Image 1 (tube, rainbow, N blue to C red):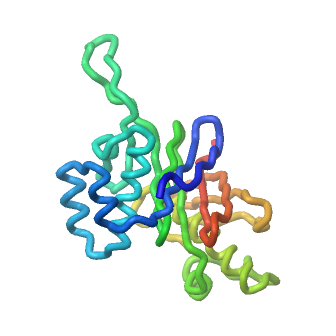
Image 2: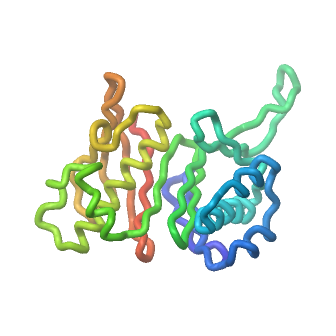
Length: 223
């Protein structure tokens, strides 16, 4: 299926969603993978994971990028090479990178491209998230809500923590011990959150919305 949805978050940040209706063979034949990506793909045991991986490349291809434009650092954080310009002093090619964050869940893959450092998460709403909520959040934030809204809010909070973790990419960060969402209502579509880590406090702006039965969360740092 073609591009499913586009969300313009701000002037320099856009999220793109692919609804995965194709089988894995169709996706694989539609794109060209680098040797490194092919090896990574072949090592995936889950067909669902393979589809998500390939659908991300479909999104990149749709936007005029190739698999080789996407690289990963030592922490596993993705980076997107936008273009190559000549350095005015050395005259050597200098890559200019954009920030990218990636998420996929069941029938959807999503990428978000920005000039700022960002993190995203896409999660299918399910009862399991609510059942494990005490492991990653303060369940007092769910008091007074219907069962459906508890699932939605727990999913949003998981997405907040996952998105901030993607931005920082540092070992030792704990969801329940270091990442804290400020109070919010589901219908507000935004909130703030904090990371308490290594004797520092960092603040983040959060935006979220429901897409079909999924929750999409976007985070960026606040200066």
